[in-house]
Length: 344
Image (cartoon, rainbow, N blue to C red; front, side):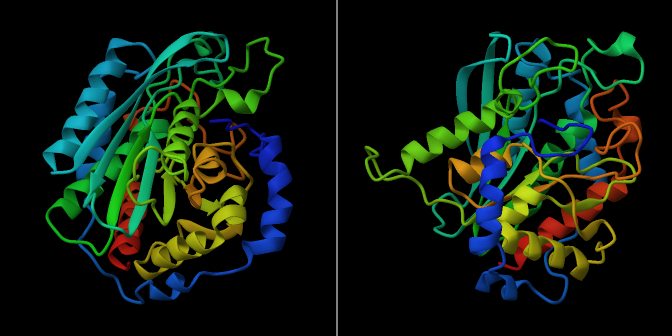
């Protein structure tokens, strides 16, 4: 994603939309917010299990686009969702990188109770950044990132949630989407004069376009029900992580932010989910909001006092590895999402 050191929004379109969204509808809270349970509900999330799912992705090596590790990991992710009884489909496309490189992309989609009319979208990106262009050692700037946190952690939390709900019954269906080609955005060392923001979240852009087409009035056939809202998980396993209320999320889906942050407080993880606004991020949730028209928030960390990056010291470095994954962070995010799903 366009996770710049300043933690500022890089999408001109989103910048233009923010004032209108906040003024016209951002302060409205939907009635379903009140339905969030005041007491913890649902099964216990296993941080140990999520940690292992994160490790297993990293065992393939960096999952950079067009690599063997990328293809093998895609098959593994799809297999895990199938193992837990979900209906899996693969959305494959050749996308164009910022430099014109053809990228063999696969968005992995898995549905729990696919016939349910009320649905929630959970999503994360699963690819690795090809270049550690924020590493403190310039010699590493063209080395791939293992992406234990910036990629694998969000997918790991989703797989663990799939494992839990597969043995239970929810009042809603859940659509899990693992977006590909998120982290091929323009590297810091590249000479590029185009729109930097459009070079990120390529898989999500493709998915949102396909979703919008299939749900348009002119679509050839009846599409599956659209999710009522979405939650994007990005870098949800880092040491010392805290999650501020991201500006694009607040603009498009304030009531969903409130739902999630309240759920965190109910299950005792309010210290991780800070009730202050962070910056605005060009991430996978932007096309989900703007193109697919699904109100979607981004659970993403903000380190206001970190000199290396406001996304934490391992962001886009060779140190984004399993040594810097914290089970406590995975637990906080995972149990919060259990609370959200089982409160519907």
